Amino acid sequence: MMPHAGDRATSRPRLPPVSSLRSPLILAGVAAGGAAGALARYGISKAIRWDGVGFPWATFVTNVIGCLVIGALVVWLVERSTAAPWVRPLLVTGVLGGFTTFSTFALESRDLLVGDRPVMALVYIGATLIVGIAAVALTRRVVVAMMTDGRA
Image (tube, rainbow, N blue to C red):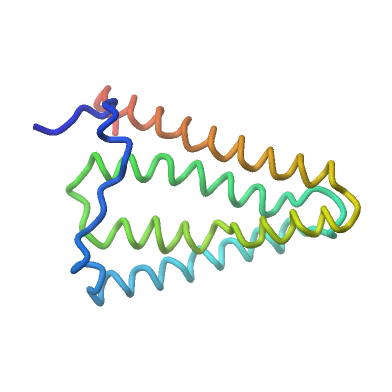
C-alpha cells in the first residue's frame, strides 16, 4: 500500500538504484540539466548585479527560487512514481543543481565578512537559510495539499 501524501514516510525522497545512475540517458540528463540551470543562474547574475557592498540579491533570489521549485518537484516526483527514471536526475540534480549555488553564497558571505560588513553577512546568511527552508516547506505543503485534493 502506498503511503498517503501527508505521511511522514513520504518526507524522504526515494533514491534510484545505483545501476541506473550509470545509464547514459541519466548522465546526459544531468549534464544537460546542469548546463541549463547554470545558464539560468548566469542570466540572473547579469540581470541583478552585485557590487560586493550591498545585499547579494542575485544569489539570494536564485537560491530561494531553487528552494521553491525543489520543495514542490521532489514531492511530486516521489508521489508520482510514473515519471521516467531520468526525470528526477535531469530536473533535481541537473537543472536545480546547476541553478542554485552554495559556493557563491559562501563566497559572498565571506566577502561581506572580510569587507567589514558583518551585520550584512549575518542578515544574508540568516535570511538565505530561513527563507530557503520556509520555501521548501511551503511548496511541499502546497503540493501535498493539491495532491490530496486531486488537483496535481
